Image (cartoon, rainbow, N blue to C red; front, side, top):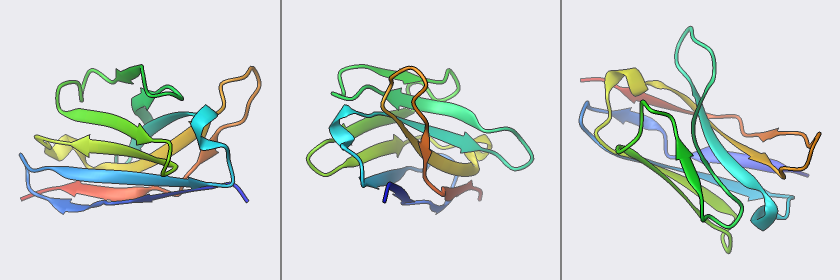
Length: 119
């Protein structure tokens, strides 16, 4: 059974840091491109960051560049999102997504973890 499980969400003050993890099972993790998305309250889901299967290339949304870092450990079937200098507008449910990258390949989504940035 294919499964992505996010963890690490919670309440943090503005300017603080939080690290998210997403553990994959049921897939050959090392061949999958991984990404983090987020959905703020009342808004659409948006791409936060992505990383290629080998980890050599990363991309970030402009709103998080310089503050967030995506990484992966293929030996642990895990992708991470380190979030620093958090702002209230970073409040959202954060989801991880896996895609093997072939034309027509289906996305695999986790159920999400809530991050709340508030004083």
